[in-house]
Image (cartoon, rainbow, N blue to C red):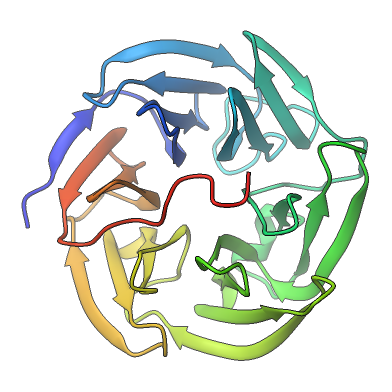
Length: 276
């Protein structure tokens, strides 16, 4: 499968997020910038966040940023937390003692669910991180999941009944069920990646799970029951950190090359912003 290069020269990139109007946000960890591109890859604007902007999530015209604080090869130090970009301003959205936020997504409860692996050591040591749910209306943050070894990529299914969580250190993708009051309970490890550890996750309309494996430069695909379906090889040195769907096109951040890749994979992503 031959990918198209949608954008190039963006540094060590992460967190692709598509807006319903077609804009694509990309976080450049190494530059401390969040870029916004149009659907063709043309740069529309850039926002200086400092530190290490990681995962991204749109809410209307506001863009939420998981600011890891300056680890993982970032541009420099910054206060770890969740930043919000709106009307050209960058500000911190929540007063909470985050350690090193990695990724985020809005859940069925309207809150922003943030993975916080606590430290860059967690990639190589079994350090226990957690997942925090933050309410943009009240500013209240609550720890929802604890005791995971490098909680990283996350994705909710179309119904909002299940949360899929990449536990990077353990090379596992866990499925959690959300009860009537939104309290997650683990269904156990759904699957493990064949080559390297999982990072960013995405779900398609058929419920298949798409997982980036940066260490091997690929994307692995599993059916809703966790059985492996296919692996997409994108080449040595690509460092496939994260991904999202732009309609029927899979967008992958190839951090090792500073490239945003577009792949026609024969799958359709979930409707954008199902919970916001």
